[in-house]
Structures are given as structure tokens and as C-alpha cells.
Length: 323
Image (tube, rainbow, N blue to C red):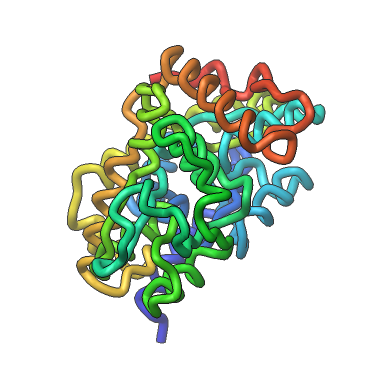
């Protein structure tokens, strides 16, 4: 018998069938990631057919695997941050970016934790999702330096690990706070954790007030040139899917198995944070804000984050994208 979760994935697999008009757009995805939610909505409502495009999701176990697949030509498109795009362009690649989500991570703590503000992190056990050059960590460090005059990297007892492990550790009382990605913030809040700081608020605290996308669809400019009609059709279908997810609570109930939510409370928080992160505007002001944020991150993250050039590569943001 096919389970409910497996049944939700069947439309994604069925979408592999290419139409004669154009080849399928191969998109690297994480099985239960937010991109899979959007692609499921696209196919379920026939937005791909209406746009005259065929979409072939290709599943991977980790974000880095999707990036490797794009570089190898195994897929045509992935979702990744624009820092990676800039670094690759400086290395000679022609990848470019159009926004997918503005949703950012956050600093969370248990109800009984002594951490109620960033200033309380001094001497405390802080778990950080990702690596020492993760965007959230660098933004938190920059915010603490500018607002409080402290270097959290020195003041806190920071350890780096995957988000699921950090959620487990904080639930067992082994950490005082965790800096993590937004889906895990949603799940933690549903379990009764407190949000101490939203990374979006930290960015605004750095004087960057326009909404900056966190991740986006990334593809080769050369590929886009050869497949412009298919790309435009896909982006139109993507916008329609986001509109459904922004308005329809019933759609979220249908997607619940694909989100990995284990309770209605988790689903409700995932829905709220996803909706808050839908990009509403992408123009010159947002591009300039991203460039200012890049300068902040480059100052703290150095070459390991941004590459040897130290500047945001020209063409990082696809010029044809705007809304």
C-alpha cells in the first residue's frame, strides 16, 4: 500500500515526462525541503502544464550534493544562496540567481534558559547550525559587534552541528541557546521554545532595511539563454504556487506529510514562517541591500565565505528578474 507521504511525492516523479516542445527542467531538491513543497503545488494544480513547461525534480540528501550536481550538469537548476553564486562567478562560472525565499533563521532558547537577549550569550553554551561561515552566524556576530560591542565567537561557548542534532541537544538541556535555520525555528517554537532574535531583525539592526532574499533559484546564464521560454514559464508557475501557499490553509493540510511536521502546531509555525518569507519585491533597492550585506559578511567571513575577490561578482543576480 502506498503511504500518504509517498503518494504526495508521486506527482513530482510523474512530472519527469517531458513534453515534445521542450526538455524537462531538471531541478535538484531535498526530498522534504521547501522547494519540494512548491514543486508539488505546481504539479498538483497544473501550473506547469499551463505554462508549457515540464519539471523533473531530482532528489538529493544534502544541499552540497545539489550544488555539485549543478556543476556537473546533472541538473539545470538548484536553490542556494547568492554568496555561493558570487563565489562561483569569481571562479569563472556563469551561474545567476533569482529569489526563492526571504525566510531567515533565528536564535532560540528553552523557556528556562538564562538567555533572553544576545547580550546573555556570554559564557553560555550556544549551538550553531552549519559551519563557522554560515550566514546566520556571521550576521549574529556582526550584529553583536555593532549593537553590543562584543564578539560572540569569543564570548559564547559556540559549537557547530546539523540542525536536527542541535534541536535534540537543546531539548536535553545540553545547550542554552541555538542559532538555526527557519524550519527548525518553527519546529522549536511549536515545542515551546522561545525566539530570542530573528536574523531578519539582526540584518535591520545592521542598517539594512530592504528585504534581502536568503536563497534563490540558481542556473547557468548560458542555459537560460537556450531555454528562456521554459525558464520564464517555470518562474511564472513558481509564482502561482507561492500565491496558493500564501492564501490556502487547505493546501498546507494536504502538504503536511511532505513538510515533515509531526503535529498541527508544527505545521502552523512552518506555514507562518514560510509565508512571512515569501519575496514581495525584488528590484534595485533590494539588490543594493544585498550588496551592503555582502560587505558585512565578507568583513567577518573572509575568503572562506566570499572567495579571494572580496566583492560581490557582477551578474550574481539575474538582471531579467524583477517584481
